[in-house]
Image (tube, rainbow, N blue to C red):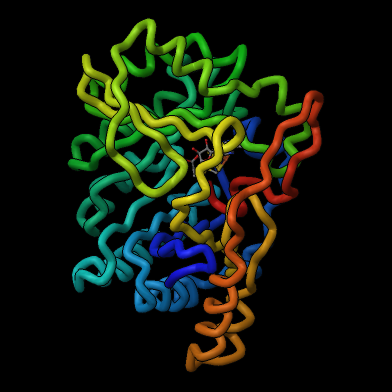
Length: 329
Ligand code: SAM
Ligand code: SF4
């Protein structure tokens, strides 16, 4: 699949649920309203849609959410869908998780052919962790990480860099990840969805973070790329990779190869734009998948050249109304 700007689209991110056991303050408000379960694509429908994408050349799928491991039946879905890995049509099936359910599922994930996962972790201080997630338990996530290491999963930690919150911990986190053989990616807060507060309060430009980390660590630009928003450095002392996702201070759209499917079957062609196509209706209207394929064709033509994120001086209004857990981070 190729879009109007010549970009080859072969990566699908799928939010399998908007629900979550955490309420990270930069992601959603405390009293977040979740979708009624009846609105979700069934696992059978999800399999049909994702398999259609694989047939059309998608080689990488990332499951996300909400918290993907919270959806009941997710492991059976993954087991079934891993047939595309076995056939070789799908090169990678992976997952972004908050880690709370990893202790339970790490072993089975590896057995399904998942080799690498991203685990979100913004602080190593249990009290701060509880504050940021509004009630999450750090030891539960650390136990999940231990189980993932034991299962043989490669791990990348995702950390949202937050001014006056974890900015003083980031250098230590580079060392902590290095000691455990984890890569680390730092993320700028993105203005997605109303969070019931002002985002600018915690916005931290990663350009400044990079300069400050360079005083503690020898960082050299890495040739590694995923055609995505991350720009990588190698940490000489640890041999691990350090990524920077900077949607606000630096555009990353020229090589974007991804689409995002919500748990209700809406396909967004850009995290930072509203253009979308309803695949659920197309699927339900025509079991032959003709309408579904037509809707995907239409979606590809809608992929915008770039996103429109911005953060103003006193910005408590999001650029987009959708929360990150709906589109999938
Ligand atoms: N619940 C899972 C998790 O936290 O890993 C998967 C979904 S979560 C929406 C995916 C990623 O998006 C997480 O790494 C999270 O930190 C990040 N995220 C959520 N809201 C964000 C925002 N407004 N700006 C930047 N990153 C955000
Ligand atoms: Fe849940 Fe992930 Fe959003 Fe945190 S970032 S509230 S863990 S979906």
